[in-house]
Amino acid sequence: MTHQHDGFETQKNAPGTDLAHTFAPATDATGAAVGTYAHPHSDTILTAVTDILQQTESGRYMLQVMHHYKISARVIKGRDVTYQNPDEFSVVLVAPEKFQAQIELLAMYLYCGIRDVEQSYCGFRRPDAATMNAVEFSNLIFSKGFDIVIHSFRIADELYARYGHQKVLDKINELGHNDLYKAYKSGADLSSLQNLYLEKEYEAVN
Image (cartoon, rainbow, N blue to C red; front, side, top):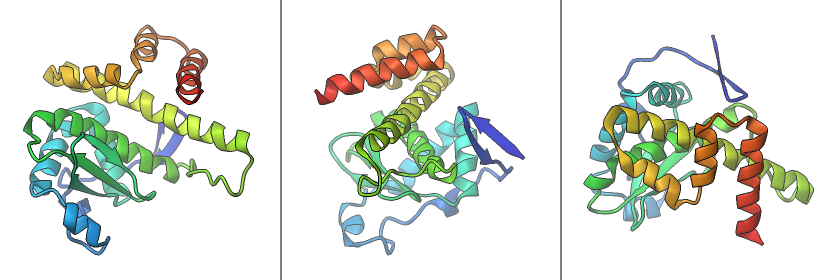
C-alpha cells in the first residue's frame, strides 16, 4: 500500500525490526577514507539509535523506509554531531569519540538522513545546477531543506515526548529554527511555514 507523508508518496511494507543487514560495515568498499575515519563504536551507535527510533511512530516508519530501500548507514568520527548524505542511497552519521551523551541527537540525524534519501525515491531528486536555471535550482534546494527541517521537528517532538530528550529541541533552537518551530507547533499552515523558512535562508545568504 502507499503511505502519504507531507506530499511525498512512497511504498510502505511491513518488515521486521531487525535492520542490521542495512548497515554497511565501516570498512566496506566505499573507499579508504571510510576505513580511516570509521568510528570505533559504529555498530554500538547504530544499534542504540535504531532502538530509540523504534520506540516512536515516525521513527518506526523511517526505519521501515530504510529497510525497504536497503539504505545503508555508517558512522564516522567527527567533532560535531551531524549527518551527511554522500549520495542518494546512503547515510553517514558523524559522532565524537565520546558519543554516549549524544545518542538522542544521532537518532534524530539518522531519521533526517533516511528522509533525505527517501526524497529521491519519491521523485524529489537532487537538483543539478548545470542543467537548470538558477531560480529552479534554488527552489528545489529550499524545498528539500524545508522538508528535512519539518521532519526534524516531528521526530524531535516524538523523542521529547517518549524520552524527555531536551537536547533534540535545544538543537533545533541552536540551528536557528526556533521561530519556525514555534509556528509549526501553533498549527501554522504550510504556506506560512515555507515563508518563514525562506526568510531565514535568504537572511543567511545575504
